[in-house]
Length: 198
Image 1 (cartoon, one colour):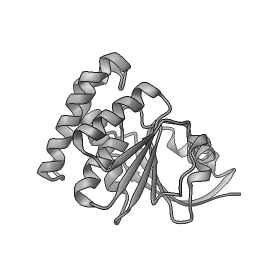
Image 2 (image 1 turned 180 degrees about the horizontal axis):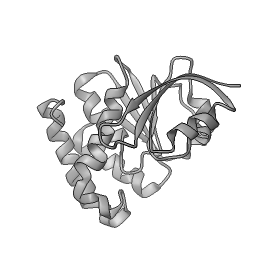
Image 3 (image 1 turned 90 degrees about the vertical axis):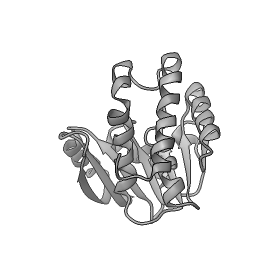
Image 4 (image 1 turned 135 degrees about the vertical axis):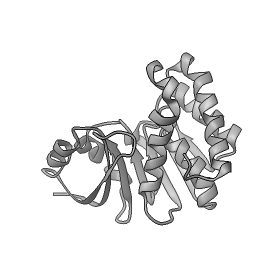
């Protein structure tokens, strides 16, 4: 995490402490990944933040869980884009409570919507993210009502990403770039724009 400011690095450290404190009670991340939290989850989420090129004002993170990548984006964005705001969508009430506690404690420009994605009614954001929420065809389907003509989607994907794109192309038209993950040789981040049904 050498490519972030000192303030961002300190805030990410405090966030890691909160995840480790709360996780045993509400299973924010798999227990086996807690020792490698900084690389397995935080650095992985930080690269999602960097994949969006250029400034943005609104970012929506679907199925935020323990805050990856939503909270990490809010921490990094607070210093890089001071007028930007992140909305975290998390239907699990306990995880939503955790997210609100982190936002308060770290004074982040973020909000939590404790709803299912399908129920969310907000203006299309500049950026939409989701990490390990659903395969790409389903992801585009449940997020369709949140996608505007200028929305950029950033979706981290594992080794099945090519077949997911192939399946999605049967129902959807979109432009996409593939960015190699810096934390896993098998993973990529899909940067998707101009989504519409075929």
